[in-house]
Length: 160
Image 1 (cartoon, rainbow, N blue to C red):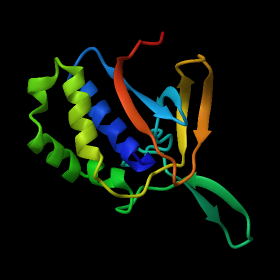
Image 2: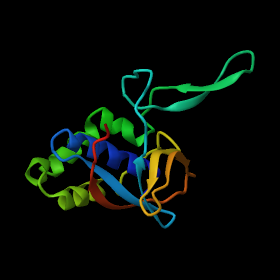
Image 3: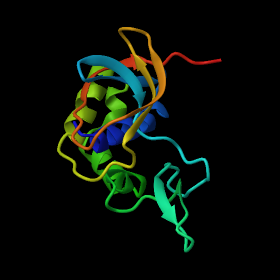
């Protein structure tokens, strides 16, 4: 899957986590390593979408910096946040009937997002943990051709 599709997977999983306990996180494979992490961050500036979208900003004095900007309809997540893709998913899968079966939730989310197209919000994966070595890093920069493979859902361990 592309980074944008993994963002959509994360968005749907977070939506489902509001309906079910235990909550789940996604285990995925990247460059032959099993990892967990987040494919987008939530906005720190309180943007209406709630999604952090850092973009280059330049002023008239040729200074530049990165700041948050609202996502646009070119981003795959835009259609989830504005309800159309979320409604499509909800219409296709009666998710409430399968909340007890994480393997079914995983399969349905995977099938739904695997054919979607759109731009990713970020080129980073955040709060990454290599599940084999235990290495934790705050972010991982990936290129536009990166391929991710969803592997499973893990029960989220609450942090204190």
